[in-house]
Length: 301
Image (cartoon, rainbow, N blue to C red):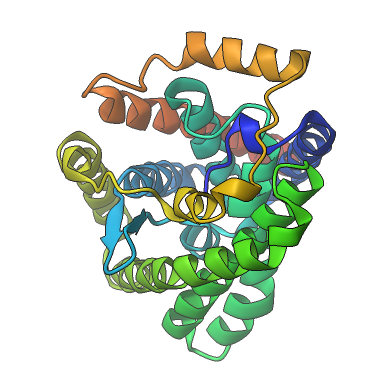
């Protein structure tokens, strides 16, 4: 579901980037209020796990497409919506900057589609009410499906507003996006449910070590065997190829492409997954350290 620069025009991309940045600042202020040092390791480990899971594209039978877990709901459910949103931001920033996975011009849209809608729509409206009724596993499955469906609709709207998707093809594109992301959402929900069960019964420190080990295996080994078929978004675009007009004009597009060409140093090498894993982990670790210190200062005052 990672939108590239060509699908999003500056008129759509810049405001969405501002919304994403503003939400991240708000989430940081909320998360730091009760963020303690004992939360650092689990937060970093889960962020790394979601990053690694996003690298594993699995084939969707009988479609010619593939999909991967997004993980927004998993982050929100285990870390809370604010820390979860910040974790997703760190993942998407590393992917865009170092892997050219998702355009810089489209970064705000991607953060909104995969982070905001999961943490601040599906989480409070679906997961939280069910979790409060002791149905957390069912809640995360249902919320994971809903989060991807909401994200799919957002992609269509953003593409149409950018002029990339012909208005006459919006309904067709919406149907394709909803249909292909339904099985992806179900798989994501089941995996998220398993992780949630593990988090309930396994000690936090042991769980964090386990997440770290699994992340290394996923990013370093299993990612080499991930499906190369078009993902859900690419597959949907291919099926309406005649109605897609890429936005490749203008100085902001050129700047975005030029910058990404120079920064995407992990896009090709086989070690890129491991390096990206450590990059995400380091960014989130520094953010956690800063939040924990701010909490201590607030307590002292």
